[in-house]
Image (cartoon, rainbow, N blue to C red; front, side, top):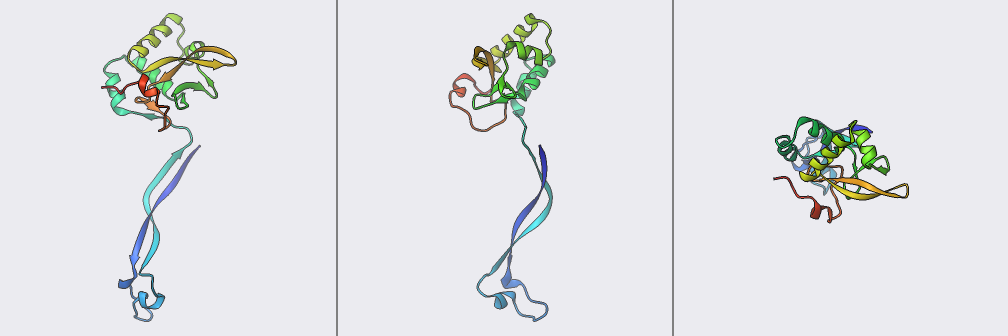
Length: 167
């Protein structure tokens, strides 16, 4: 769900310089000890909040765009919205993707072409194979490099032993 919220800024008005137009006296004399008045002022800016988003690192995407073809880049973009957990694992709702379901999601008809893509992405440090439990069966799932894309800011430290930043 997306929400747009207007941004307001906090402002303080120094009452020692403000005069009551009806009495001609400084407001500070009329209201006592408090010397500033805090108000919220509307701005022309708004904050866009979303419950479901992904952060793509621009430098990493530019680096990869010079290393891989546009088709592979499209597959990376498609996979980037699937990341979940502190391990950045590819998920469909609450179930991790395995080779069969990821191949189907990416709409790659040939198993051979799918596994060639996976091999290229592993070699480029974009994804990493991991064991996942899907309905009681251990299958191969994939973690995605958090230096490339993420939906969170906190990760299990071990993920940084697997993935390095793109240079």
